[in-house]
Length: 351
Image 1 (tube, rainbow, N blue to C red):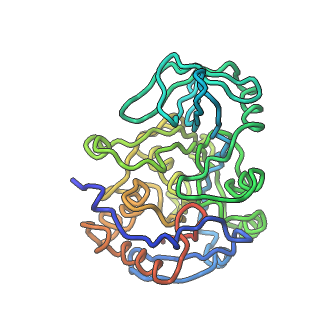
Image 2: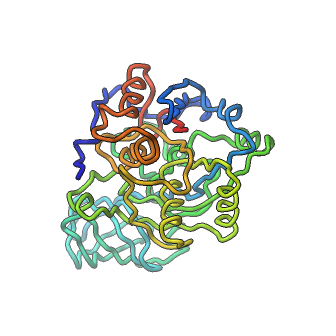
Image 3: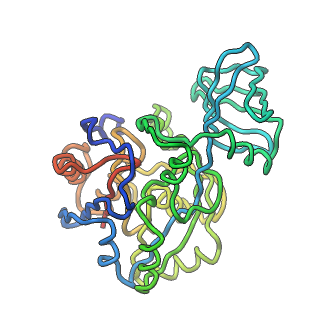
């Protein structure tokens, strides 16, 4: 059994991007051929020249909402909530700082209040019952909420600018506490050019939760299960994707969230629901042929997913440890070449 240490590497702090490239599609793109173990250095907009009508590009159209809110406890102390998942029209699961106990009353701006109904000591998650329901609740969040940036990004940008920066141009369906960051590199113009070239673009939805940032816990590796996230694939999209796969077309997933959605569907046949699929070597990908992604945190589930795609049974490379793997070598080269890492960083295309 692997441990988190088997997916570790050292990253200098100055390689962590704190702002996106401008324009978005001018970031760098490292293309890695996982079968030949070869690297090509590109700009992201050059993706247009690399894709062909034999490719199907699949995007996650989830939308990040201003999920971080600040308030006070009834005792007067300050509190911060990061909203993760809507449980009912008025109840939400969240991460709280500091920790909270059931029956505590929380007060926020715009006459928003909440009562803590449950607390999970092992995960640090709390359930809160609010005095507002959707859609009024979402309108309140638009006023008082803050963009849920990852903890390693400290930005001086205004809230309005962050809401733009930390959102894909094709975001449509509210529900994510984190952006599907591989999609941040696309511009409307690039997408229009891709369509004009005759390349099919399909859309799915997976609402990204805090598990994107949480360190792996022992029970994740013991059970082979990960945090659960809600996803949806329309029957029409699923039918077209299966037909494209049958025709020998290449399914190019944009982001690990898209890859997780497609492989969850392939494993269960379920078009809508929650997934706790944990992808790590030696996982056999059934739908995803190629992946556009970012450079991921050490010891993260996302690094484990991309490691699986680059090793047996998907390539001839047996996985033992990240630093000795072909993908680990790619990351090492990216660090040397001053690629920018994590959510606002440069992109990688695993072919």
